Image (cartoon, one colour):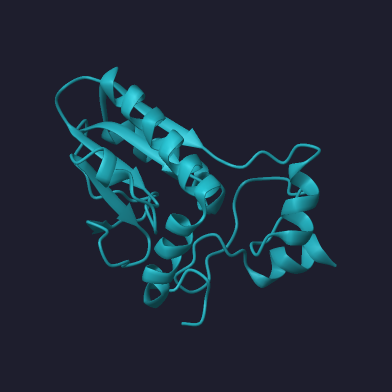
Length: 175
């Protein structure tokens, strides 16, 4: 795999996060939000981060079960957010940083989250906002596809990267 997200590049991805003070501070602030949200959750059940990638949430929240769709070194479990391997009502917290837009079928994910969360459990989604500043960045400077004219939130999956739309969707969005 020569992808930016290749599991072979995890050390490089983590080094980039650690080397950029603003980026590291951003992650630290988000993980503090995870901790605050988790403190408002019931005491019983798992605390799970979906799409952990090169992040370091588990350093700040040791009981967090880290997951990703790719088998990154240091991630506890490989998990598809649309078919989570957790028992019904067994998760008290699900945290996600820049993951939601990668999920090819968000309705399936939301059903799964509802199934897995204990009563009173919480889901914290933090994702990109395509506002007036974000749209040009996402369209012209970001390495992932951006389709502001999409009519639904479903796209095909190719390879191991759930965020990559099918070639038909890519053509539709980009010419």
